Image 1 (cartoon, one colour):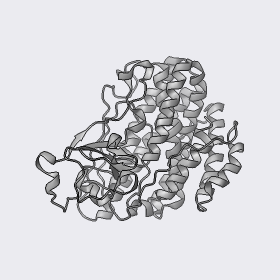
Image 2: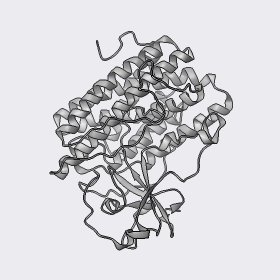
Image 3: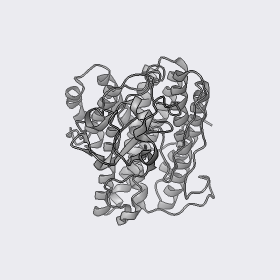
Image 4: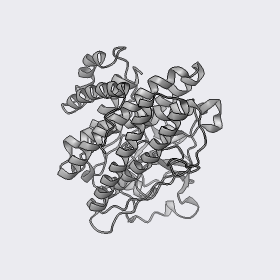
Length: 411
């Protein structure tokens, strides 16, 4: 069976062609230096029907704390009396302001736009030995003292960061656990702790990176199988149903490929767990969701995160020094571009069927998802940048800014 359903629908094909044109422009301009915004302004009117839009990216910067840090599980070499006993860090949940709930219910807000974080509370505040950087960013070496598991960087979150500085008193730290946007996350996906094989720390960074990628790719199988069922229930065009089914098959292959890379580099992939869901296959128990909730998930996971992830994968295919990784990412990039195209095609079908209030809530969630990507811009471990081709901080910001200008603002 071919990896892509040749009988796929015209709307998805049109969106795929549109995304490929935009991606080519962004990759070309991003690779050639700091003139990206001006150059993109000149071509954005050709890429979007409504012409150029104001970029919505923030001015916050992430200090590029270079080095091979970034994978969890490393022993903490510093014994800090300020982080023991009653002052010891403990895990907590998101405490910042919530948007209006999906379907008009504040309690239903699943914080879909910002699930790449593991929050830690410091009851006695930030230790005096830790000197934060601009915009409440904390250096990776200090993040090791605060965060457990796999993470890529950390920063003060919510009201712990005031006007770019960390407030006094108890502090909430956001340990960002995924800097890419690989795959479509199903609602209820539980986080996991990833271990790396003892030995070469550099290999551990790559192993941890691909282990998390495999975790998200496998979770995407469930997400697309659920989407296929929901599209049938909604009476969506059969062509969209076929595209969702094809995407699930793609994710099976992606899971196998990224698991292989994870094991090659010393990682230990884990099977994803989803709260309150069936097995993700036909006949599995799953509660029926409203069109609004499905559309919000599609906007956040597809139009924002998958679109960004597809472009990052294309960047990796061109920049990875490891030939095996480059070839794998080339295949994944092509598939993920189709998945993003499905998201945009579904959005064009579904969103006009929502009421004005629901569309407003959806727009707020999409905006929050873009803001979450901006907050997640962070330096990857040196081996992930070099061998896996993951974009550095400057390239990440240019990619997000360009997508904001050419796609997300216009939408």
